[in-house]
Length: 299
Image 1 (cartoon, rainbow, N blue to C red):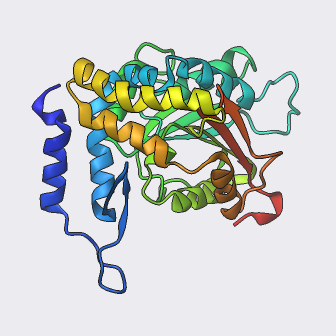
Image 2: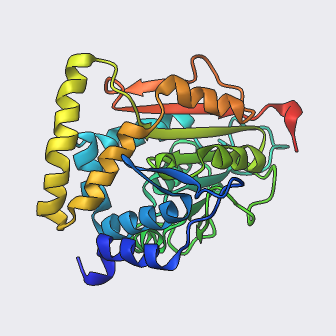
Image 3: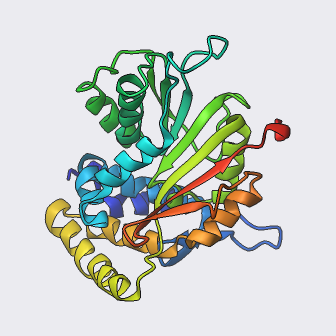
């Protein structure tokens, strides 16, 4: 990695530039960065430094974090959501295609799958995806990867730099499907992001999240934790010369709410949650969460 992608350099620069905001009582507002407690002002920049550092090795990173099966999870996630409107089964009065917003999806992994599924399974040439990511390096990686797809210069795919907690460029009640895969655990204010998801979705629109979660088998959990904290930072050091970023990533998984806790957060944002609200993948290494915006609660 070049010096411009040095995680510790980016962190030092962020700490020098940003004074921590004060709470009403005069104390700096704090949040978690992995297992570390830091000021809220620094979290966005430090998370940004992590993803700037890992952007070009993002697939390798997810291979390490998921024991190599994140691609199968993503395929299942998209297949289960079944994006697109099949012209043979949709009434002619329905508008053509879905309007999908993929948050923290800079590298395009989910967006390309969504468009492929809509096109090949539902014969829908109109569904479009806006990929929003706060990190410009991740977006650059996605645009580069898009050149290998049919969607690179198509109006069906758009990349925008945006903060999930404040999506001013997205009109209320305009999105059919909001997806976020392996991103929401890095947000400073998850509740604010969920409320923005609720705002931008159409009544009846779906919030869908794929995220690392809590392993539900104690024996398997012990093995996975040893792998996560023992091997992954070391692999990050050896493969990418970047132990710190990989250490943060495994800590961010450990700090993320449990399946039931996160499902409750989705309900608190106003969503209806189908069934128990989540589906465990591979003993809970990851989980899919869903929420539906009620038809009667348009903004």
